[in-house]
Length: 83
Image 1 (cartoon, helix red, strand yellow):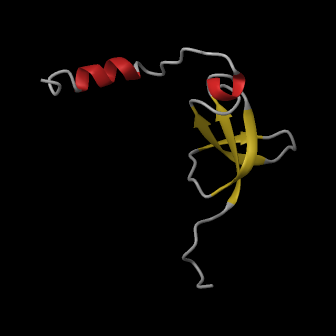
Image 2 (cartoon, rainbow, N blue to C red; image 1 turned 90 degrees about the vertical axis):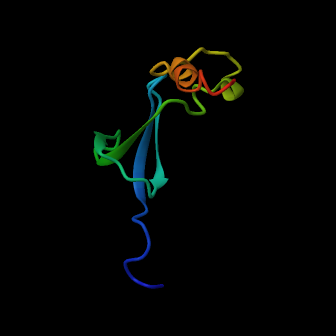
């Protein structure tokens, strides 16, 4: 393999903001934040709005989640386009 062309594949913590559920996996995604994990090590932190812990398909429960008024923002942006 050629050196210095592949992204850094490392352990990363993903945290579900709607349920405070977090899991450790490996990824190449860039992260600004870090978090101390259960094993005492510090890992990059990626915050996600929804995961398998809070998604209605996996939980069997319907939750209404509107982070930052996405629906209202969409309607304002495309209000004049639907003519």
